[in-house]
Length: 553
Image (cartoon, rainbow, N blue to C red; front, side, top):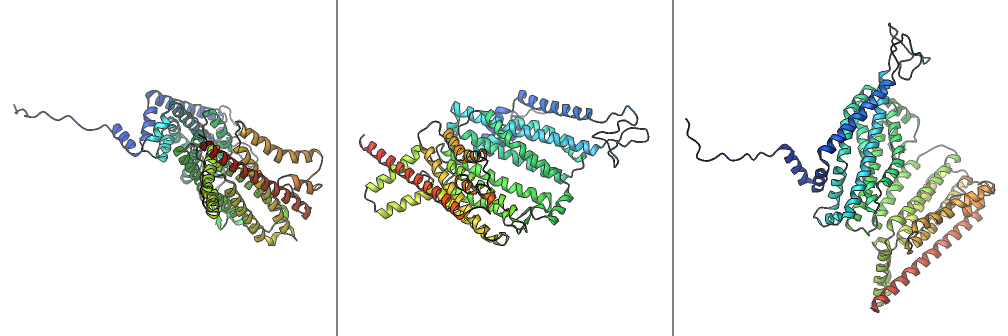
């Protein structure tokens, strides 16, 4: 009998693989681990896998039921999924059994399943992210997260990865079937990979937007799902159009057309080139949303972006459309009219967005006005005070965005004018100069609408956004409706459309008169100046009254 060991054996310290994996995740991103622990429960796992398998089975049996019947010889003569001759008649084998077009059947199956997976991934993730963020805000745990040493980037990344974990599991369980049907339909592994990369980037874009909506104070997850549904449909439609086009079509398109030439990049050369372009600009959109998320997480009262950031954002958007506009098209004037209108509406949208992004809360503007009023009262020289104010208006965080937006509009207006001059060889007669006049009138309208928007956003009203919608409806929608009801078309009453309709003379450039352009430019620029002056006076009064109130305490 061997002698017994004088020391008892030490207990095993081998850590289970699952615990080691969770610890590694916790070291990388504690927020991700926290969300995973709340999701990884047997009930959630079984429900996600069960529903995924059930949906796949139902879809498979539905498509099986759509196959042509094989119990009757030489029947049917016409069917969606049968191989056909040149006259769309079904082909049969020697026994009279219809020949099934399995490639087409597999393609339709994979398209349906893929669209469903993207929809479930995006809408399910958006709902869970908004609901989770709203719950943490109501329970107060969000304030606790702000006090932790984790950065906002790590917290948001942990939420995006962990909150929709069961949605990810359900989608992942359906990927083998989707990949098999896609390859069965004749698609290549490269196209399958491109599709998955595109779907992931679409989901990331929607998830970041959902987090931004939640950060802005939205508690209704169903509202985020409703908005996402409206935006997701065209995104998925474009995605499937790109992947439904045969690869050889891209080469033919590149040889026959320069429409998809962006600066010097031939986007239509291949599917990979076109998808890479989409990835880059979708990534840029994700980057700016992520920047806004970081600012709001650190300070819920901050503007979505700083003034300096919006300069870069506006420049990037200008580079985007200018890459398509700077093409040597040998076309008539009728093809340039929509481009003028597009530029006007494009920059009007940017102007509205800049006001909503850059307008600080009323209290921040009040603090800024008080600060500069105190500086002036303390005896600083007029030049120093003026320099400080101008600098703050350009890049300050709490100052009104009046000057910053005006500078961006002026810069983009000069870019548009430069574009018209660069295309001078394609403008008949003096129409190029008329186009410049129309652009000047459009940008004067933007300055006027920007001043009005800043006024309304600065007011102490609970229904400011409803008032904004009413004002913009009255200024942008009602005038063309009234002129249309009066049976005054753009070409029949060009001067009226120029004076009272935004970019109204764009499609009647040959009938536009210099008097109408000068009149529209003058009254809109004068109105913009008056609104800016009144806004400036209201802020000065606000600063003086705030200082007086503090002194009287």
